[in-house]
Length: 340
Image (cartoon, rainbow, N blue to C red; front, side):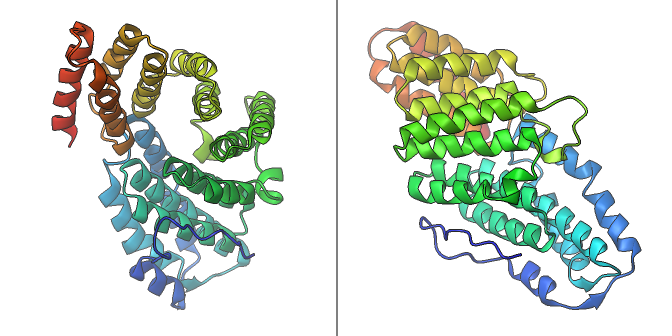
């Protein structure tokens, strides 16, 4: 299977990590037991990394994961396999780990490294003949392109993420995730009707998810709170600040904050910004106080950006004698010194 993914225009052409490329090009015999070794390594530890990333952010733990990919995963996927099933299992496990490395880089705001890992993960998923996994990684690339202000590229990648088996073979929860990220890319590109249609489809897909579904570990986090967060960002891009505020509020109040510390901070940051944009600075400061309280133990470029944005939004109010604004500004400065 060969995937045609639009080449990102905001960076130079993909420069894959040399060690991985060399390993992928070598031919070495592997004993069949290596399949179980990689699947085991990419099982519980992988799920743990997904959960740690949601709780603490992507800065922590990246170096260890990168080293594991270079030292072990690259070796495992570079051989002649006992069976085609073994090959596909190995490449799927490798693709998921490389994807996690990309997502952690993205969360740490290391965008060039994230793009390289995502691109390689798509190729590994294609080798594994795992269409839903390829769609999942393309969804992450859509998220990144949208955040970096490249809406046309984001729409192109999002369209690829939901094409054919990438969507039809995915579980309802994963289809909802693909769809809501596509909706935000469409909204950012000014395609309002398509964005709203994609939102409705994502809501229907998540409603179809049932307890006991055989779902991949990579979608464990996507719930009503996640859908509300992405819906809010889509509505904001569509100019509906009131609707966005309501959805951010719903996300905050349906999320399990102990498991999603990083995401909780980011959502509270957006909620406060929505409140401030509608002139309710006191409410924004109250929301941002909760966000700053939740920053303990979080090491995330996106959470840090949320704190930077608090100060940016508050800048017009610094000399107006609003005590709550002054207090949040000072607290935000202290947090930025700590997490720099």
